[in-house]
Image 1 (tube, helix red, strand yellow):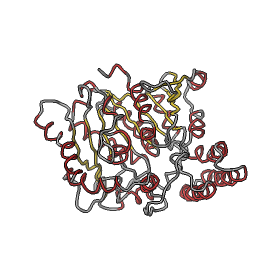
Image 2: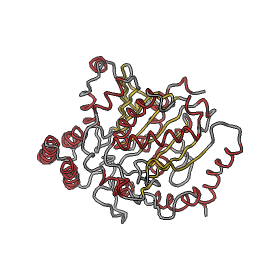
Image 3: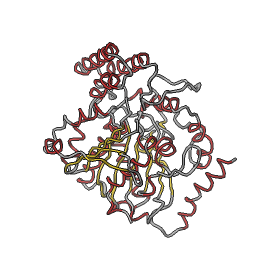
Length: 433
């Protein structure tokens, strides 16, 4: 009953917005049929502490693939309420309008009618997102002239890089009108080989394995490299899964998403590649799934009866299994060359997409200003009201890098104040009151 009452207060903004003369509602959600048999769900929140038409629009894309933005990003990281339905002090609504998208189709409340409608590569995902975003801009036209940014996490970074390129091309061809400013790639699966190649050294440096263990882990990384060079992409993904199991055995079940926390068994059984399920398990909570499939579902009123939140996440991963281990560094290069602002941020305690691997792929960029970026000064950042170093920052022209301290894979969940500080820097104070 408490959930129903609080959610009623939270979601009543939709009715208020309908009667308001404001061009930007306080809250809104809906479905977009991005293709035949493919239905994408989105959930929008208006900025809470300023005029909504003077705040930028930030789209949040989750990882997995198969993770839900409207669930994980919203209730676990940057939305107005926590899973326990308590106000979040570090919600990004303080600085921006937020758009959560359950992407690809099959993630969260998004769904497909037939298996043939699942996406099998990031190009299809990017095209679906362009279609969805066009429909969103028709729903709230004011955002055509308001600065737009894409923030993401994990595999969401791979999708964001492809989406960013597709969106920029659509803007250049006048298929869509929007003030697209930049992307922020959080702990992003941009170059899988660079990530797995650094698992051994990272675990060794943090005392989670010994020299022999690091060598054993590296042998799997080498096998993955061989599979990728032979274009055996599905095999590379299977080897990655096996490598995760080896790492867990050698480290007494290290938490891939934050090495300083130990996963606890909570009776949740996950499929081998169900990352969304795995995160739920490692955060030791079933509350989010209960919330989304219970009170949230009832309040949204548009979720089909046969659709369960996260129910199609397993197939989403399986249909991306060939694409999963392919790098998309070239898409990041394209964004930089197109003049799009690219921010890379990484959590100090993340293993699955560790900082070592992230720095490696950044240094492989073919961007013409890379040498100047490397020479630029790395400076400390302090969250508001704190004297403790919260992050380090480095930037040159339209490329920026943030090293976030005391955070794992889900940076805003682990270090909310610093994540909020980073957001403000990325979107720029000139967009805020």
